[in-house]
Length: 325
Image 1 (cartoon, rainbow, N blue to C red):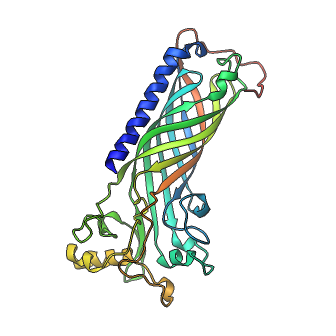
Image 2 (cartoon, rainbow, N blue to C red):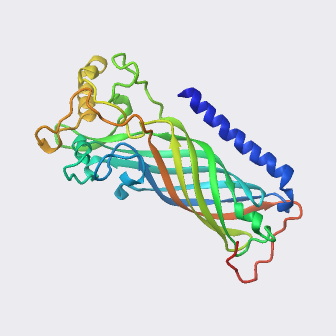
Image 3 (cartoon, rainbow, N blue to C red):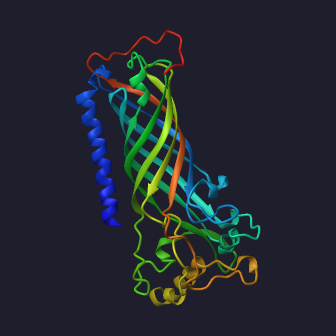
C-alpha cells in the first residue's frame, strides 16, 4: 500500500510540475503578467465511511450520506496565477466529520446489520493541500485578461495532508455520556500481536483533493466561487471502523482492567437497546476494509487579487458586468 501511495503522490506532483512548465513554454500569450489571489472559503463538510447510511446494503458514495452529520468547514487560500487558464492553489482548512448508526432507519433489510452495530464517531479535520486549478474556457475567450463579468468553470486536482482524531460516545456506570478518543483503545486490535495484519493507524494522512467549481468575477479584483471538492484518502480509520469485531480478552491482555473495560464497551456496542439476537461476536463483520473513508466539502470562496506584475495592471471596473464565457 505504501508503494502505491508514494507512486500516486509522485504522479500528482509530476503532473502539477508539467502543467506549470507547459504553461510557461506554450501559453504565455494568455497571460499579461503573473498575479496572486487570496481569500477565504466556507461551507459544509461531509463524511463518507462505514458508519450511518440508509436503507439496503451500505455503499461507498452519496447514497449513504446522512445530511444531519454535516459539519461546517472554513479556511484560507492563496493562489498563484502564472496564466489566466491555470492557478496553483495552497489552502489550509478546518472542519469536522461524524457518523452515527442511529441515523439509519431500520426497515428489515441489509441496513439492520449496521443499525444494530450501534456505533458513532466524530472527528475534527485539519488539512493543507496544494492543487492545480484549470480553467478550460479561457481558450475560447477573445480577451482572457478582461475578466469582469465572466463566469468560468474549472477543475481542481492536487495532493494534501490532513489530521484527524476519532472520538466515540462513552456512557459510564453513573449513566453520564461523554466523548472519548478511540485510537488509544485499539478497538479492532490494531498494533496487537493477536492481530498482526492490523497495523496501528496514523492520525496524519495524505489525501488527494479533486473536484469542480465555477467562478464569477464581480470585477478584475474581486470574485466568488462555488466548488465541490472530494478527498480521496488512504485510510479506513477516520471513523475508527474498518474490519471485524475482536475478542475482548485482547484488551485485558494489553491494558489495565479499567481501560480494557472501556475499550471492550466502545469496540462492541451491540445489541441495540437489548434487541434479542442483534449482538455481534468476535470475527463478525464490523466494517468494510475494501473501501477507504473519504470526505468532501461544498464551499463558497471569496477571492481578492493581491498582486500583479509587468504589464498586468489594475483595471477600471466601471463598465456593467456581462455574463459570458
